[in-house]
Every structure is written in structure tokens, then in C-alpha cells.
Image (cartoon, rainbow, N blue to C red; front, side, top):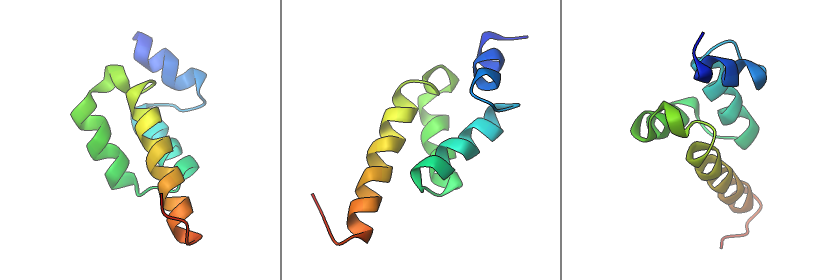
Length: 70
């Protein structure tokens, strides 16, 4: 079993696709958007840069839906 698969499972996901779906849901982002970002960054960034980018986009999306734009 690969280290990445162990990391996905440690986060409660069975595979990378499940993990990306969770990231999308947690941040209120479309799954396709998260997949595109993840594919550009590569699997090694799934637990670092991908999370930071998605959290930032999710926060902006939330602010815009409340009428607050930064």
C-alpha cells in the first residue's frame, strides 16, 4: 500500500477520488474544480497546497454569497 493511500485512509477516504470529494464538500466547491486543481498540483500536494487553495476559495465563495467581497 502506498503512503498516499494510507494518508487518504487516515482522512477517512478509501481513495484519492473520495478524498477530493470530501475536500470539495467541506469547502463548498464543485468537485470538477477541485479535481482540476489537484491534477495540476499532483498527488503529492493533496494534503498541502490543495487544501490551502480550496480553503481559500471556499472562504471567498462563502463571503461572496453573504455579500462580502474582499
